[in-house]
Image (cartoon, rainbow, N blue to C red):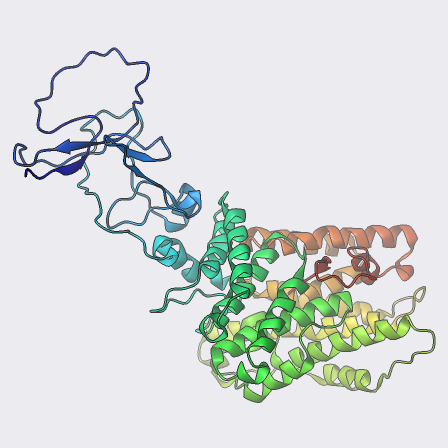
Length: 511
């Protein structure tokens, strides 16, 4: 029996001599349709087939009616596949920095000749293989943006391993990478990540995918920060908390540096969100204590993670819980609030100072980095003192003491003293917001708004741009009702219903 083979060629048989055809176009012909032609290899001379035009129909149909369906993955990943190259959507190719040059629909046969063959097996066995180039750029660039400085245990990184990653993690990374290259398929990947994650949580194996689930929650949290400072943050935090408890409790999770940094960033987001909204944290304080029992500051540290040194992170964790307690007591007629711990925290903040490491004076760059770190840390110290006064000491209608206003100006000076190119000052967004709400100087207002706009453009995290209308709302109301009668907490409270405990309630996060 004579053997047959399939040749990928647009309506052209290699077994026949080409003849000049009429230019008259048939009405039912599709000039861009590719057909599989049955060839007799024994009668053909060796030659290399060529690709004439792009595929316009959703399926490839053979002359025998056999249909090769497109992949089940999202449409942005479906393009013409060339062996040895991973093809992505035009938006994703922007992230890859390279794209195979495909012929135009009007190209004549023979203008572009690319050696190709019909693959005998599936080109991509996993989503990670399909999106390899995009994931590689994500790890080299995008995952470092939220950090003060990069380190090995970066919780935003997509970690390659011999075991294939679950679909929800790859889709989450693709959504965050898609945002940075302005892909129109960002929402598609985000929806796919959420849907796949939801399905996996119903039947997940804690030991197998627990790290990937937490990675996905962290990346989706970061993705929401790229959209706005206003979001449903408690939904992410409650999901992580439920997983921690379902998989053995916090004691089972703090055994490695990788899981420690995951817990660290979630604790930080939880505390910052609670601090601003003066509400209870989702993660118990026992989680922070368990983390501190294993924390050594070598493989990762809080300053590189979020721009706040550990000694001040401890104050943030305690102030967040005290603020929620104070707010609850203010709503009860006979409740009292114990200020003992508050006074101790205030004393510790007053006496705190930056300590330079031994490596700070090896060369000029190390010295410059240490000075930048000092300015960022001092912005946080003064910002927490400013917060402490407004939340716990100030009474509506009372004028703000000058020494409090001086702290606001000091925060500004520290933030603007950081070198522009290192962008470390962006980690002090929350202290700068506190400072901006206290200052009435128009030139200070302009400088703060311009800096927030610059951070927004350079990082593509739109939580910075969300700060601008919040500050403008505070200033406008202060001008109308009097500076002594308005503070930022009133503006924040209007962003959500304080009497609702739904996790889908919108909250402000400056983390």
